[in-house]
Length: 331
Length: 253
Image 1 (cartoon, each protein chain N blue to C red):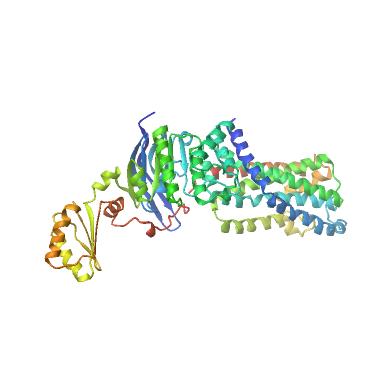
Image 2 (cartoon, one colour; image 1 turned 60 degrees about the vertical axis):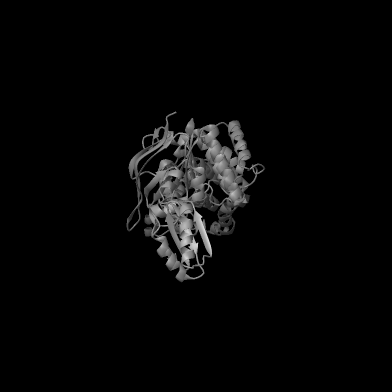
């Protein structure tokens, strides 16, 4: 097995609509090593799914090239298909079909015999908390169960490389944690390489070995979660006061701190970043006592990937400002 | 062989789903059965009018209804594929190494089996109404109708993958099927039509298929009508499968 699982060189994709051309992916270069869990982090519409669909042979790249699981994407798409698993965002099963039948049929499309297909399917049902659902129609499964079934389908032929598109969307917190465990076990026990997309910061942070941050069709940053967080200028400090007047005075004091960013005042709240929040705070508090200012709340937190994203793109990446992603049906 | 293996997989999955939910198979057969029982009797006196083609009313009408079944039974299968596409099933199959042609052919074969079952029911009903035809004629006629259905089902799947929207698909089907049906002499033979209408109908390939199946039901198996009908059906299914496979192979946006 080679050490490189995915190598993308200038992969790009342009969607043509009637009136215009949209460059959904603007030439991305990256390498994914064997046995890594790599996360593609970005808001919806950033080009994550388009990139994934190109790498899984579903979409032809407008430009660039890639090697996936040792096969050239353009010259040997069948070789790529044989070696990868793919779990799409939009599901994979017919509502009227039985869960067990769907996974067995799917395995057999990879040339796996019926008995082996059953064994693989049953084992995955077991691992993904789907036991007892083998004979159930897919439409009777809950959203979380169906999502786990999708994931089981993508793994049933034991691929060396798995693409997961938003794997934990729609799962409750416990199912998400279980899924993460399962993904880690795939890597640890089987050496499987996992390439996933997510717009959840905690998922990228806790699960991924490495992260590629994508925004507006281009990779804006890459590294381990730690490296990325170190790139943010420091700890985020947030101070709340009884009155807005006091916030203005303290913002003035804070701006004189060593290495602090320009404080943002929002009503009676002041926010800024300093290299070492815990060390900066006592001095700041002393300054407030000297000026006879009451403080109603203080918060210091280590940078999160959300802060990373905010720093890189100037926009926050929270669930509540996510817009539906164009699925690219225009092309 | 890989293609056969993959086709069989797709076929048996599709067949299983159809058998489990036979409502559509029954709805599909209702239209021709209603035509046969509620419209067919009106044709018996018409069969004596000058210009009516050879054969009695049932020998003329049953083949027409069989072709109607082949057209309408198959043309709407694309709706099912749009639903499958939306559920992610089509893409899930397209990331497997399965042969693209098999993804189409498995489904087309299922539709052919359904049409054969429906066609056999239709012929049985027609026999009860008074149809007289040899078993050989019936089997060959059903075979041609099944092939015709296969071609329309393949095209229907191809168009479904292209349009990916029921709202665009439905008007397209109605816009194409209604003139094709009216201009093929399915309900009333074109020999009764005024000259201009008969001329227009000669540009419709389905006209020749209907004429061919009628000749076969009369027992004129070796007639040129039967030969032309079969040849046109063969061309239609070849083109249909070619087009449908291309759409499955083409990148999905």
